Amino acid sequence: MAKKLFIPGPVEVHPDILQAMATQMIGHRMPEYAALHGRVTTGLKKLLSTEDRVFLATSSAFGVMEGAVRNLVSKRCVNFCNGAFSSKWHDVTLRCGKEADAVKVEWGQPITPELVDEALATGKYDSLTLIHNETSTGVMSPLPEIAAVLRKYPDVVSIIDTVSSMSAMPISLGELGIDCCIFGVQKAFALPPGLAVFTASEKALARARTVEGRGYYFDFLEFEANDAKNNTPSTPCISQIYAMDKQLERMFAEGLEQRWSRHREMAELVRGWVADRGYGFFAEEPYRSVTLTCAVNSRGTDLAALKKMLGERGYAFDDGYGKIKGKTFRIAHMGDMQRAGLDEFLGVIDSCLAELG
Ligand SMILES: *Cc1c(COP(=O)(O)O)cnc(C)c1O
Image (cartoon, rainbow, N blue to C red; front, side, top):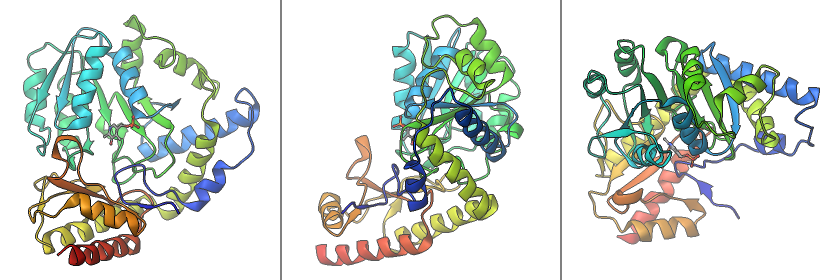
């Protein structure tokens, strides 16, 4: 029996989605694919509130995170780092042979608009990477305030990862004016991994046209040319795109407002449990993530034992990421989860904690 997932990705996938993925194949150069592609990218534009191009890539998020750097960094990039994924992105930028600096804050801290302003005011950078919701630490940086700062620097191309936040809360790309927004689908979108979505503004595409060494697989200009025909450069993960088509239908049927408030309520439920049980929070308010809670193990619980016990009862539990493993634990509350499922999970944790003594 598969364990029920309460880890921050991949998360539980709804049976309707699994069923959609069992749809028979079509050829990606057939009109049936173009119709599917057009429907999905139109739905995504509505969800993201953007008129920019929306592209579908067959890879996990990091494929496009690397691709974006290869396409959009010309002179020098600043990578804002406040956790494992954002630090890795700096490493990836350097591995792509780009000039880049990391602006680092302690894990658990947000990236603030002041920090962004200070870095960009140096005039050294033509691009930046930033993670909206650092899944390793449960910290959500204030995107609208950061976007307001970015407007002061029209020559800088912004590359923003919303892997674990997109669809769980209002993020209007059109209003924010983000040049390239990237997300995978196995977190807040609650789909099986393998598809990544990204947007590109006119400014981003214009930049890509001037940058050498874009490669092929993630060349934004290849995506642009193919998307104009409702197509992709290479064979896409058609089953995942069927899944996305179904998921967009489900999201709009639930209603976006409802989806956002369900996420807020789930976050409050888990935060309440964490506080009641005497654990701490790795992130301070107002920077606590709406899609996962990173708790500080202030009770000194044997998290490895707890994880094992929960596993035996059929639940996947996360005992912290990277250098904060064992010191923190994370509970995901994203995607298609419901309060009832979280209540059940928290109840089982309680009974395990009682047993552990
Ligand atoms: C999971 C995650 C990633 C990495 O995604 P992959 O799909 O494993 O490449 C990147 N950024 C954030 C914020 C994530 O949560």
